[in-house]
Length: 180
Picture 1 (cartoon, rainbow, N blue to C red):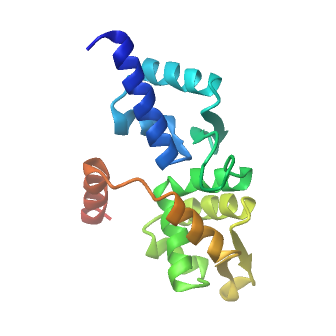
Picture 2 (cartoon, rainbow, N blue to C red; picture 1 turned 135 degrees about the vertical axis):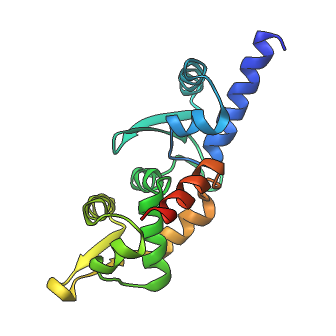
């Protein structure tokens, strides 16, 4: 395939992927699409210069977003971009889905339910609080975590679905279940 034709294919594939999964971080794009890192950087830069993609740092990750989403008639609002970046990670996504489906929950039970450490849970609870999606109420054994706006989470998950689980994700989950 000629180099010029290949560049168009990479750019189109990348743009389509970012439009479908906004907030995905660059290493995940590279892993999912098998794009060499130099090629990925080049096309992100080029698509950014053309006003089609924006890239921003979120929680230590460089994440990509479409510059305009047709359904909403403009860019994804800043707070939703931050939330989408979190939803691309397994623990915050599982946490939000758990609280969305089961309602307000005690943090002490959440770590066990999500198979994560209390420290990891606390880190993501703080990040989700900062984005304004969860609220921690009460003290001690009465402490509960609840969604501030369940409809917002529902809308974002419907509009921008999670990345499909791939073979590596399934293996890691399987392995962690064998060795708790």
